[in-house]
Length: 359
Image (cartoon, rainbow, N blue to C red; front, top):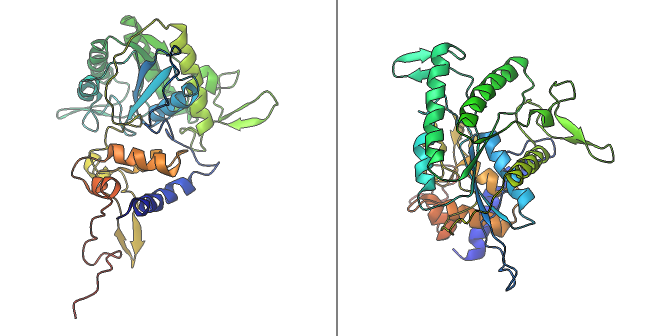
């Protein structure tokens, strides 16, 4: 397949996701960066670049994307984003950050590591054959132990750690749970001398009640969050990014992080798995449709729906295609399509199987 044909194929895959991102649709972690190298700085005008790693759930992914956008013009920060939208600390069997962080840190050096987890943690904790309901002493003890496991791994990095509290939620019960989790996280983080950043006042009214909007200098209303009372629009992610950047600069000290090879600044931890492998039965497969009452899926193996949505955010076709190439696992259908320009043949009998029947 010629290069322009491969690009066209990628554009067809990206188009539905891009079209879905209307002004009324939340954008979770879109367009943090393309991973393309910036042009070299003129001689004598070299800037020291601080490597920043953000890890988290879906809201944490949006925070990372917002930070990447607000830092991009200055070129003083290189933001890497790792997120799993269903992750947290309560359910390591879904995604285990304490086990994953050492792999992320291997071969990389970061000046700052940002964590945002907790939005998925208002649930029963499983510990072997035991079950602990949210808020019980057993739940708190187990959650504390799991948080400390992650903090232990972060402490070994030598980076400055900034832990961001879960944001306020519209549902009162959900919001109360997030405040409980934030209070627990704050105590553990600050006990280690790390920074705990609570953005609650930036996303609530003066009386402390939930709000999904703010106003600019011209008194125009700016929508920050989705109608579900949980998700963030791009403007909300950018606001979180601005507040986080201010916190980074406030406690900044010169840090020299050796350059390390990275695949992409949009580095999704589940890129090596399909959605069904990552969370069986919990996440819809990308491109699923129905024909003749039978569902079928069009998805290059190894590229998750999250990766497609990220690549389709604000990136142009070339940058989006580059991101897809970067995250395509070796030997996968995604690599075959996006890197080699050779799509795999459709299984016989699937609606996109256009082979002629035998005479």
